[in-house]
Amino acid sequence: MPSRRIHLLGAPLDPVTLEDAVARVDEAVATRRPALNASLNAAKLVRMQTDSELRESIELCDIVTADGVPVVWAARALGHAVPGRVNGTDLMELLFAHAAERGYSVYLLGSEPGILSLARAEIERRHPAIRIAGTQHGFFPPGEEAAVVERIAAARPDILFIALGTPQKELFQARHRDALGVPFTMGVGGSFEVLAGVRKRAPRWAQRTGLEWAFRLAQEPRRLAGRYVVGNTRFVVLVGREVLRTRLGARS
Image 1 (cartoon, rainbow, N blue to C red):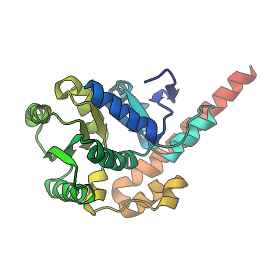
Image 2 (image 1 turned 30 degrees about the horizontal axis):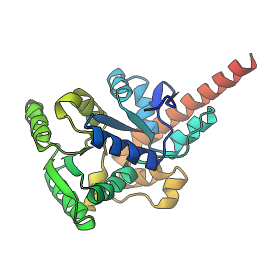
Image 3 (image 1 turned 60 degrees about the horizontal axis):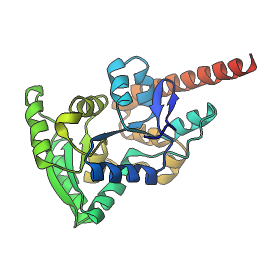
């Protein structure tokens, strides 16, 4: 990536647009040099403050995008020129269309077997020309991880989408970057569930106003309460302290 990379609360962030990210994919496919992508949201940023493995795996990524509007707001509050968010699901869906147009092959890793099958069917329905090099559900035991990596490498996809949770997807791609040999790898979290129709995505107005988290919390309150209620509070405190520290430093 160019030297424009910034750091937000100790986390790397590349101020790019969706179009910039797609151009990075084209570059990676053309050169066949593995490139890793990570999406940075408020919850992940908070977790990185205490999770050194997650932080190190994201620092290894070639492109780190602002997944949520709160990250964009925080960056701008600290004086960084970030053009806008590059949501992971938006990038994934754009890359499906781009891959179908360019003839790139994709590999789908993660989620439950049934959900993965539904997601694949939906991708092929939307993009009949897409080349799916293979699929692998995410419920394999640790002892089979090496075999999974070998199968993906043997399929030689151009793009690998990893639908695992945080930090599993970040650690997986960092751990196996060279062995996989995939030009572009990105984590997509629960996006396969959205494609499969088992989870609804927040409406556009919620995405634009930074309230996507509230929509997801309403769908899964028990599972996500800690992540969003506690995590978002910590995020606001972290950003507030950094803004105050920066302003006091500027005055002195």
